[in-house]
Length: 633
Image (tube, helix red, strand yellow):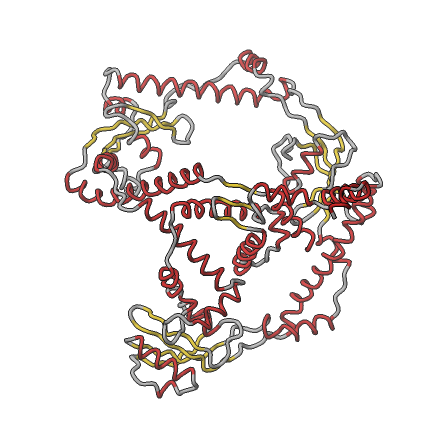
């Protein structure tokens, strides 16, 4: 080999090998080795995870999601929706904490892992309540875990819990902070207020034509009408093709016979024996007897022994309902022993009485509609290809609609939000808001792109364009007059409120005198309230906010939502909390503040871990894992 590599021929071969290795990606492998990550996608200290670990975590997350989801999520969908990236970020945060713990020498003991495993109810024998090794292996196999992987998972969870509990151990809020909070929440305030109609008794505002014209001239830009366009819209959905499909009576009958027991029958009734015991041992013994086929009436020691006949909706206990009425449950199914309110319950399913089946005449229309919609959806998918071909061919909207046999809907001139000059709105334009927005960026006659929504496909075009402009004064004179009157009333109202408050604040008149002068009735709370009980006292939110943010004796005004009507409010008294009140809320506030401090300490720990642990990631390996998902689906 040495003589070969020293020869000219050998050197040429060696160069070819090196180039080939680089071409097939060996250089990326070398880079990974140099980075110290090995086969890991990410690593922090001594802890890391490789693509197989990441894939296992993704499988677990999707399995948990799909257990309760009506529409299962695939890996490809998870990749498209960014869920894979979220799981990756979650796992990197986890190994950062675990790497930090390992650097401190924190590790759970074998006994701690065993104790945690024994406490998981899913691994316990229903008769003995003890850890069942066979059941443990079965459950782990269902979850896709080996025993070693599960033990590592438990150990990692215990390590994280230990560090978090250590960071928050013996956390107690300082008394000075608790005292401030007690004073804040415990002080009691009382307020008085009255309603002030600022324009009550004032002469009507009647501007002259000259004033209205001057207002128009000074507000030309505000009075300008936006550009509006006449829009033609094509909307295509599966419903458009229901009339083109055919469903035969034979097809309806076939589906009815195949699904009538599951879909078209009333809920069944089930009879089960329910036995109640005072202690767990007696319940376990009864469970064994019943599981072996024993007569429920022969079981001794039961506090009660009843035969129940009911439907699933009539059973309030969720676990009992699942055990007796769950999918696939047949006579002999068992429940328990389970403790409920200090007593132990055992049950066995005795019999199942199917509910009556609805005749085909009652459900044929439902089946027909379902089949028609399914076939219309298939036809809809085929029409989508025809639509794309028509758009690619440069057809105008009328030609496209003709090819698809779908009508074009024309709308009067609307602005970019789909609102006409008279304020009319169109629900279909709101549904096609993306197509409408693009239509406003195109020239008249140009087609928008195809816009897909969950229910329909839209294509739009501009029929005509009405440029933005300010209407002539004579055309909108009444509206301009209304706007001017509103502005003048608002100014007069605010001036009257300001004058009233200044009069009270300066001492020219008292709060009571101001109320009397304006013919208003003063309202005062029957007793002082605190921030803690103001809401339950029925005090409106704006008044609550004002009474606790206003100084003693100061007068403020609040809008009411009614034009020109204001609430004039003053704080009458501020009382510090009594010793009894402080004692009553002190413990609760101290616990809440201690909990807040504990949360802050956990966040500080996380920040310290992130700054002290170097997280290394292999983006190329993550990208390769993502490609493997898209290529295998």
